[in-house]
Image 1: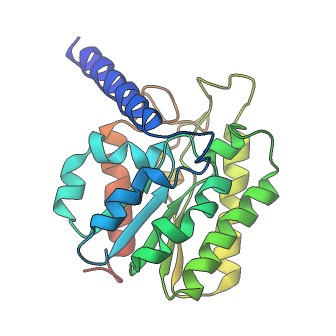
Image 2: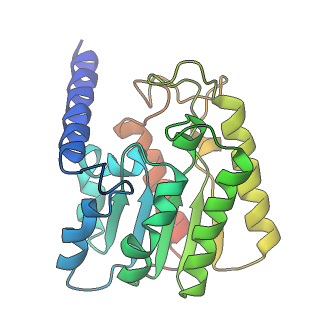
Length: 233
């Protein structure tokens, strides 16, 4: 009973968070949502160690697990719910490069698979991710590019069956990182530690099979802090 109440509260908070974010943006004049973090970027008093670039999974991390960010004050979150790799690539200069971090953590691709901005091939999604990596490296920023999280269904796009597409995109990301042979670009594998037999997030880690609950974020936090440890003490 308490577990169900907790899940309902989390879902309601998530809906409120998304609503507040959307209300702050005029999509007719700011398609990529440059305005979402413009004020926060201007108010930074020093360069962050790590910028987390992503979509709702990164965006919601702040309010679902605030203690992680409190424990890492030099980590900044630049996730925007619903965004595809196209939108992230467009705002990558403002929300990552211009902040001059040591590292960027990129978690992207699931909304492309969901066709949030229309159909797009995995090859073009991979191209956008590669472009973000290459832009970061040209600016002396280390890169932790993450596997897309397991997802076997979309509540907002029921016709798309994402699980096999997620696995294929993750294989492409991993192969690119391995072929690049750049010690300052690493692949961070969330998928293996979190996927169930259907290629989704299990019920103990998610309410919808796609977005992590605090228990899911706890696994992610352990994985990413270990991955970043050689670069950020």
